[in-house]
Structures are given as structure tokens and as C-alpha cells.
Amino acid sequence: MFPIADDNPRINTPYVTWSIIAVCVLVFLWQFSLGSNSGQIAVYQFGMIPARLFGGAGMDPELVAIPAWATVFTSMFMHGGWMHLGFNMLFLWIFGDNVEDSMGHVRYLAFYLLCGIAAAMAQAFIHPDSTIPMVGASGAISGVLGAYLLLHPHATVRTVIFLGIFATMMHLPAMIVLGLWILLQLVSAAFSNTGEPGVAFWAHVGGFVAGMALVPLFKKSDVPLFQPARYRAFQIERKRGPWG
Image (cartoon, rainbow, N blue to C red; front, side, top):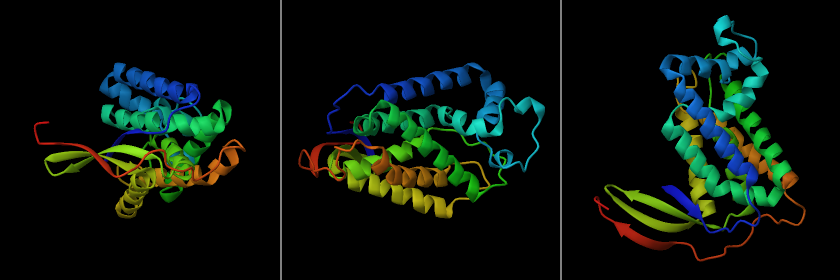
């Protein structure tokens, strides 16, 4: 299941969402320009390392560029590869504009950063002795998804569903798309080894929960939760074979 668009029109220009996407892309291009060795050093310098954050690990002076607490913020704008960046920015592009509309630019930025902090801390508390750097916007974006689920659970999301070598385009309610997404994160987190490199599933869960908890506090007073659907869901748009 792969979402590519939703049916919610934006009201205002999502300057913050677009700016976050631009910053993440520019930071990744900077990482890429460093080459593999220096790029890996940058990940250790600016990624969030739980053991360093909690003072349990001494670091090579070459790997200490900023205070440990600051890496909670810098890690949100770094990524581990093109696919990591691409998937995160796609989800933010689809769901971020409507959440930004519901809050306004300044409150949305504060909300995004708080969700990112909550996500980083969730991952860090699960494995506080880890020396593996965590990077990526997915924790903060998970907060955006949690907020979207409460704001627009009935919104229609255009979704590609893969059935073996075939793919079908369907319009599904956001509650199904995002509900299945967070369920997958929970199952993956339960079976993941937090001491090994890989996807920070607990960060996704922590960010999502934070987004759901914070959206009632950050949304505008005239914006309701659980808004109704605009269009009918469960429509099949088209089917494609293995060669498109």
C-alpha cells in the first residue's frame, strides 16, 4: 500500500511544509557532496545517538561537532539515502499541507519540532545505550500523520496497492491507510532489534502518538476534529499489469 495523494484541497500556501522539504533536500545534497567517508562522519556528528544524549558514551573528538541535545534537532533534517529522503518527503507533501492549514504556520512549525523531539526520545528511551546515530524526518512526519488521522479520518487517499506483480489504484479513507501504517510500525517495532542498525520504528510510534496528543492543543479553535469525507472512498481508479 503506497499513498500518492489525498483529496483535501489546501486553503493557504504551506510555506512551512515546503520549507522543511527544501531544507531536508538541501541537507541531503550536502551530505552526498561530502563523499561516503565524510558523509558517514557527518551522520555521527549531527545524528541523535542515545548513549551520547544520556551521557553514557564518550565520543571521538572528531565526531563531536555540536552539543548532544542539539542533535535531537539536526537529526530531523538528515537522511540515510535517496529512498529514505524520497518516502519521507512524499508523505510530508501529501499530508503536511492540511495539518499546516489547521494550525497556522508558526504553531505548525512548533508542533512539527515537538513531534520530532518526542520521536527521538521514544527511540532513545527504548535503547538508551545505543551508539547508533538516528537520522531522518520520519519521526516528526509521523506526528503529522497522527494529526491528520484525527483531523481528516474520512479523507480519501489515492493509494497504489500492489498485488504480486500487479498494481491497482484505489481511493481509501485516511483512517485505513494511516491505521494500517501505524499498525505496521507497531508490529515492526515489537520485533525489531533496537541495538542493530535499521529503521527507528519506535521513533515512528512515538511521533505518531505525540501528533495525536498535540493536535487538539495546536489546531485553530474553529477547526474541528474528525472532519467528514469530501468524496466517496473505495473506488478503483485503474488496474495495471506487470509492464504498466
